[in-house]
Length: 166
Image 1 (spheres, rainbow, N blue to C red):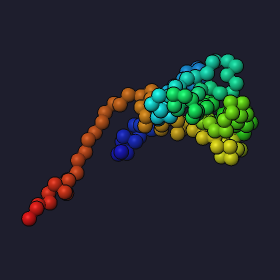
Image 2 (cartoon, rainbow, N blue to C red):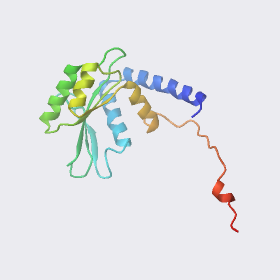
Image 3 (cartoon, rainbow, N blue to C red):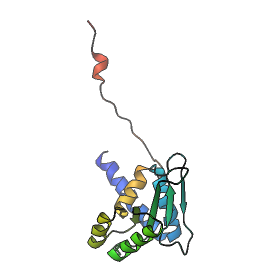
Image 4 (tube, rainbow, N blue to C red):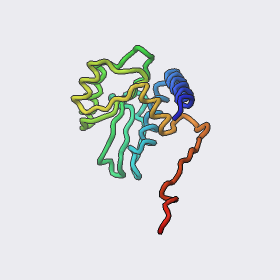
């Protein structure tokens, strides 16, 4: 990817985060479930859904990776402004919610960032963290909330094609 394309995509990433931060928390929860599904976490016969808007027991989304739901991903989504980082207390609350569902693993996604305490706690509890920058990168990579504007094809010489048999 050339510098012009990278600069353009960086601008789109910034716009994405700005648009997400202006949306409702429920919209953000739907977005992260759709993103993780696009990334393949739903599996072929799995289900992905956002939990109810209130009294969700600290879990914003659930992805059953198979038809029977034997492998499940639990999601917490926090739509925060820049500088309002997710702290250790929120991470501990999410881990408590995971325990309530009989799980010890989950994905915590925010539009901001994580404090050092939250990062350290998550590492010890098998919680995957996705901050705002990574979120927008993944949205571009898996084409969630964006359209492909242009694609370029470049070529090089196929050296094997030009090998002559004696």
